[in-house]
Image 1 (cartoon, rainbow, N blue to C red):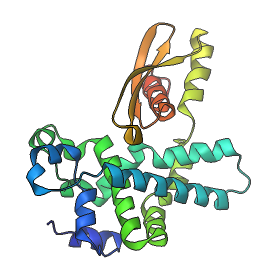
Image 2 (image 1 turned 60 degrees about the vertical axis):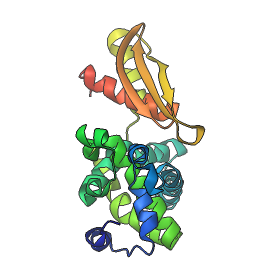
Image 3 (image 1 turned 135 degrees about the vertical axis):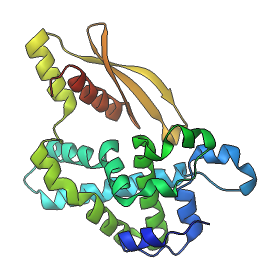
Image 4 (image 1 turned 180 degrees about the vertical axis):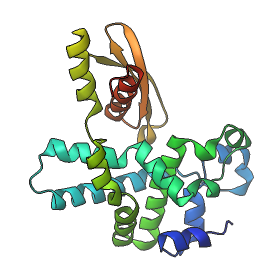
Length: 230
């Protein structure tokens, strides 16, 4: 069992059940090489954490911005819960060092992969919720995720990349972008989609996400960078 004292001190939460925390940090690749240890990987607890995160963020935006439209609040929420932002939180908390990974994932730099780190943040939120309930999970989210909202708005990183890509593509090339599913993998409760952003039949960029909508948004964001339109 790992020692989580530094992390407990950093986030101000005592972990009542170290087994739950170990599950939150166990990547599915580790299970494949250590089946005899009887551990469970973090996909289910990540699924729970994702739902808690969405609820806390949505409630906060609803209460803080009574004058904002649904579309504007959706853009704020997407920016707060997207993988890039959650990965930054994971780096800040140094969550990568607690991950249990397979040898292959370790060698390929798994501790620093953004999508693994983002998923780990959601798993940690799920673990906090299981151990301490909604209020404590909400405080954690407020301190480490919602605290960045003003910066996100100031930087404009909440702006819908799909809308921006479409607007510029129509202006510069008189083309409306479209998106196609390139691949989908994983069980129904934890799908991962890869979408392609196209101008006519030209693949501009790819993007990943837990839903087609998120993957499209990420592919549009990558397309803006590729075309140097950002």
